Image (cartoon, rainbow, N blue to C red; front, side, top):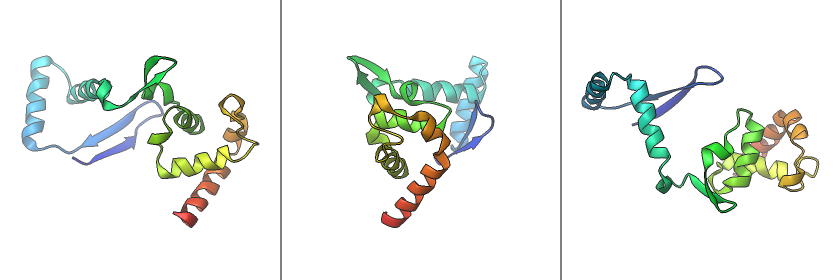
Length: 140
């Protein structure tokens, strides 16, 4: 089932998925029974699956299990990358890891997580991403 995400608004994303005609019919029937839209059913199913502890989307922070999407989500990409680097560096994509190397290797931006110059990172985000993309292309 290939998935695609299309930006709808700043607050909402659109997710398309391919299912068999039979599965779509089953969801449609379930929607009729429960008076829910297909979108509402899909959203509930995803949330139910993703919030299970066995998904690996939880990390122990200060002795408490925390849900990574709640810890790491931020509408600003630089902020989101920093949170991901702090709480789940093992889940960073290759380009995110290279971008993090650019940031963490420059004392202007980062000394440790308590001394992060987020304003400088945000102000220079396009430059940081460009440098990361150049490094990635050069060495990957």
